[in-house]
Amino acid sequence: MRRVSSRQRSREAEFTEFVEAASPSLLRAALVLLGSREDAEDALQLTLLRTYRRWDRARAAPTAYARAVLANACRERWRHRARHPETTGDMESLGNVISFAEAVDRRHVLVRMLRRLPDVQREVLVFRYLLDATVSETAESLGIAEGTVKSAASRGLEQLRMLLSAEEKRGRRVHPR
Amino acid sequence: MSIHADDEFSLRIALEGELDDVVPADGLAGVVIARYHRTRRRRVAGAVGLVVVAAGIGVPLGLASTSGGANGGSNGKPAHGEAPGHTGSVPRQHNGAASAIGWRASHLMISSGSVSPATLVSPVTASPYPVAA
Image 1 (cartoon, each protein chain N blue to C red):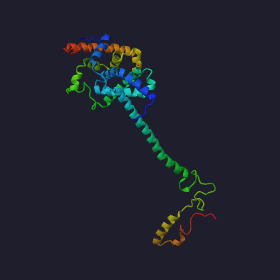
Image 2: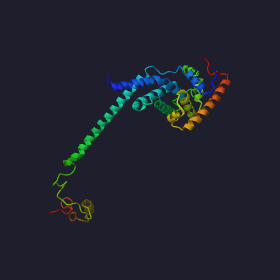
Image 3: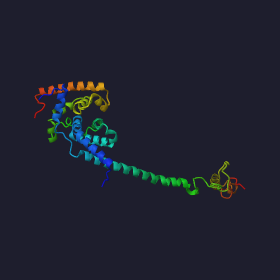
Image 4: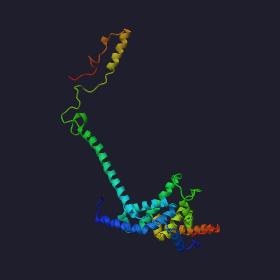
């Protein structure tokens, strides 16, 4: 049995508290960025593992640290998909193979619209409006300039509005429930 | 309900509403902590194994180099006052024709019958190298 010191116990308690508070929004952000529930859960677990490994450094601002780690984990996943397109499938590439999971995913219209945006715009919108990060926090987490964050957010919102208008014109309701 | 994407508040509310059923598994922190300890144990075991392997290779090599191989010296150098592999002869000097060639030549000449083998130098009986007194 593992012997646990009091310092380690308090470290684990702090981390558990952080995970319970932050993991739902991090998982949703990963889902929007990656488009697949499995990939999102993998990215979240990797993010939390890396955060816990550096907890002494991250404990001052764990949410900001985890946001930056999540952005890197999602980018690593994108690069992996680009290198191995035959082994990775997402909602768009599966085409006419309709599984139960996809049928559930079809409910996420807004998520699908966000997935059609360029990577930088999607990242910025997710950080700004799903993770509640400020412009400077978003810029720091993504490693881009604040001006880029503002312009990407503006263009992303504009493009999202156009995509949603087109979707509504096609007769689909955004929220069918 | 329609979404006005140019309205930040609407986008946030719409995203949260759409993804409200996306929640992580229970006990995620415990899973992450257990995975951390598992990978840490593997890393430590790997580092220890690397040290053991390095020592296993390095110690015999170090012993071999310090023992000086067959010479039996203490630090790889010959012991003081000991002539390294001294055979009692001076170093080789180049003296033109080698004895082996002489032998071969003698055999050839014997078969041809033109030269007596006694006139040729034998490497066994008479070394072409001068020997120190």
